[in-house]
Length: 143
Image (cartoon, rainbow, N blue to C red; front, side, top):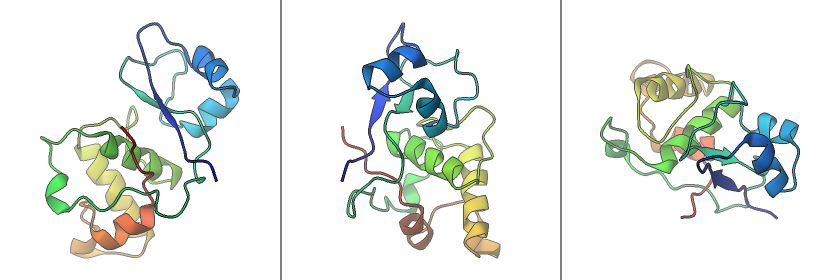
């Protein structure tokens, strides 16, 4: 089973060139990256999914990083991968898509996911807990 792959955008890249490089279509890249609302606007350092979501083998998910991880001072590709999974789950509160820094949009999106799972009150505050995190299946980040 193939692991989901991401590509980090370099200066001068276009989505079409990235699609060609990974032998996929531009339509596939757009489908796998719903956070990219304008295909003509990508930025160096941005992570682009270049293989289908949902192909992660068991054990290939990010482990729960702990509640203290989710702070505005934290910047990690895990946060962006989480945001992409929240979008896939239909739980986006992002204006421009997720990035690697924890934000209020991440918290609001995660709260939507928690409510989707049936959590309420303090259990749907938007701060990931182990139970909801394990159900989100954030793909493992290999760096």
